[in-house]
Length: 310
Image (cartoon, rainbow, N blue to C red; front, side, top):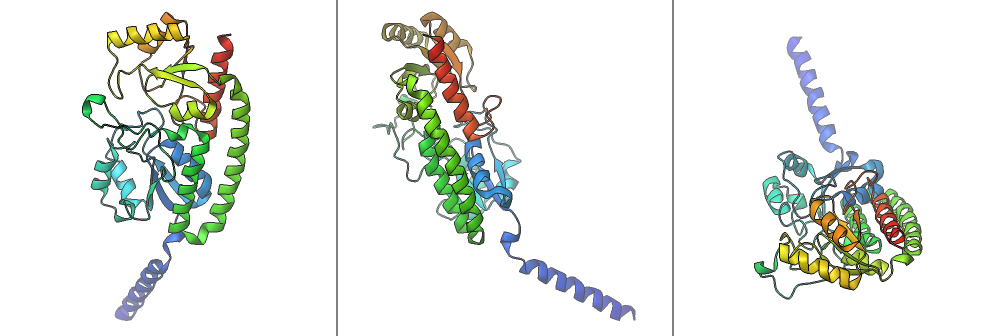
């Protein structure tokens, strides 16, 4: 009797194990890892309740140097998709994490590796990548997400990747994407109308985050407080920049939150420019937890700075 009961229990256990193994992968949520918070927001917008999204960045970091944490590796091991900015933006931290994770699904060349720069025409591709020029990006400036029109290219790349790994959900993904696009397009129209006062306005920033934004809204990107990308300014550079700003009537100094305020504040005081702190990804400053809220904040802050200077 005992052996018969044991045989029944074993049979039930084997049947349960077989049934569980037969459940298709898509019965669980799609696990997505993004490098930055703007990509995480877009992934959530498309995937809704069907996805579980983890961003390596929280919003306050340098996009080129998100601090690596041991907790990143097990999350990447589970990932069905790895979504990145591309254009070498994440070169300082992502390759080592990918090697540590050893997840074949998200390695470059596989469907789970999603480079959102695909289809973006990069600006400022350097003629030389000599280290004397600073931390240059050989494929061009990677900060295209600060142009909301180019963010639609990223959205499309994310949608295509999700549809590839989970085609059974394409109807839901399509509906979510279309709804988000309708909202984003309406916001772009609002931003372009509001930003008409920005046309021709000259500004400097700490790092070269803003050429795509400047081109989209017609601003004049005068230069950076950094001597060269990734290289802190010298006293001579600050002196020359300050003199040039006065001569050319540069009215706005942008400080990104990952950089100290002291030098941008001093330059603004010496030139009479307005100092503003602007996030470069959602979460960089309070009340910018989504991509649209972040772009709202940036446009509104820039407009207010121009109006305050009149």
